[in-house]
Image (tube, rainbow, N blue to C red):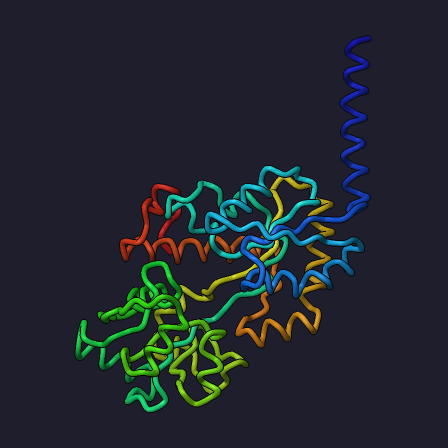
Length: 331
């Protein structure tokens, strides 16, 4: 009799879980943003949120929970029930937490509902620079190793990481001058303090449009609509192709053990939301590329991004833990 009661209890619990998953969502959902209000991740999250609410059929409450370079929000979502009612609006940072000694938790513990999009880097020079192409810059660097000044933001920043990617493709011995952000670095470039700078399109586009800076190449395998006159960096450096696509990214994540039926509903909702014209316009205007990928395709992108970036940072001495010790193999 006890055995029968226990069996009935387990069956009832399993049935209740199934019903909950099949009725998802039957109440409002919580989207936890990894960074503070007004930042890039928050802007992308709020831009897609309204369309996602419509597609999902329930309200999505947005909660900003910054701290620990994204570790606090990631841990918060990871400890919430795996039912799809709490998800993460995240950026790329957790993929670096292991090698930076921040946290052992990364996106391997999550299911990628949607990688919404990614930023793209651009190599810029002053409008009156002697460098007319990426080939010109590479030739001068080769002829004058360690002498050409590059604007950067320090190890781990976007400019220095792009420089390291280039250095893993061709000889690139430059003198990186650190500034307190892309903005100050681009100002220094305009003032002639440095010869060139890798930067995000979102930071450099207005300077390029105003004629203050000129783009030598976009850090992508193809040209992009935001800077149609700038060639792909792979035209000058074919060896860069194995590291691309690369750039800061934005996505939607839930715990990996969330029921498959719930995952499927979330995937469908955010796929529709990422196709919203308002969202696509915002992404384009901010220098981002809409990716709108999920599942295995998104997982492959995340793993490749992690391999490329962690090893580049490790090779420049910017990590506390070797990627190899974490089972991350070289790309």
